[in-house]
Length: 161
Image 1 (cartoon, rainbow, N blue to C red):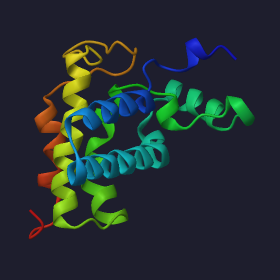
Image 2 (image 1 turned 60 degrees about the vertical axis):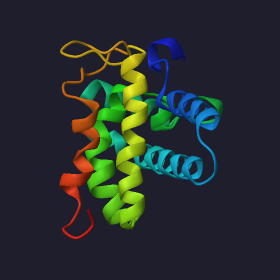
Image 3 (image 1 turned 45 degrees about the horizontal axis):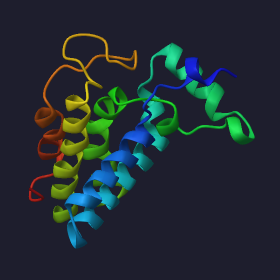
C-alpha cells in the first residue's frame, strides 16, 4: 500500500506529539498533566468518533486503513491531518467531554483552553488556510481558533460554565 497517497502528513497523532513536546518545555506540574489528559481525551474522541463526519472518499480510505491487519492498520489520528481536529472540536467539547467523560467544570474549562493551543500552532505552521484547501488536501477551515474552541462554552449545560 502506498502510504503517501493514503495518509496526510503531518498526521493528527504527529501534531499532538509535537504539541505536547513543546508544552513540556513550557509548562510544568499540574498544567502539563492537564494538557496531556485533554490531548489524550481528544485523541480518543477522534479515534472513536471522527470517522462519522467523513466524506465518501475519506470514509473509504479510513475503512481500508482501519480494517487493515498488522503493520498496515491505522487509527483515525494516524490517517488524517490537522483539518480534522477543527472539524471535530464541537463534537469533542460539546458531546464527548460532557456526555462520555462526564467532565467537571475544571476539566471542561481546561479542554476549551488546551484545544485552542494546537489549533493556533497548526494555523501558525500553515496547516490550515482560511477560505481555501488545507495543505493536507482536506476540507478548508473557516473561522477562528477561538470560535472553534469556544464551542465548549455554548455546548455546556447551564451551571457548568
